[in-house]
Image 1 (tube, helix red, strand yellow):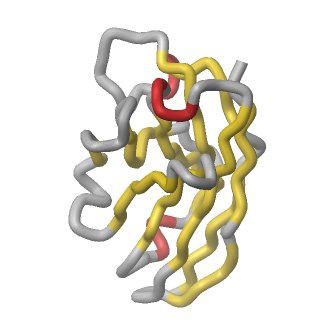
Image 2: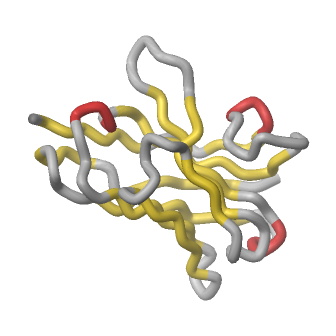
Image 3: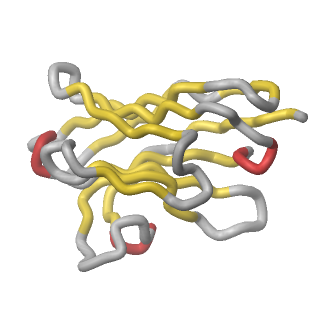
Length: 125
């Protein structure tokens, strides 16, 4: 089973940037889908970005395209989510997930079996 630990959340003003980090252990790092998800209070968890095995293919939710970038550092077994041009609507708990067991779409939370504890992102106007 994959273990995941997120970090890097915090408070930022609208228009600012944050970089979230996810430390991955317990699995062959290069063989797993790794995704970022968010959950705002009172709302369902939703997909943000995913990196497919190998790291060369990525996919993003429409709401973050052009603003967020998912990347991997295989030397450190880390996955990052660079978030730019943040808006108050991006305020949520952000989770890293792995161990994809679905057939698609890649950004459906139900298809991921391993989750981190989450890191809070708060964007003020």
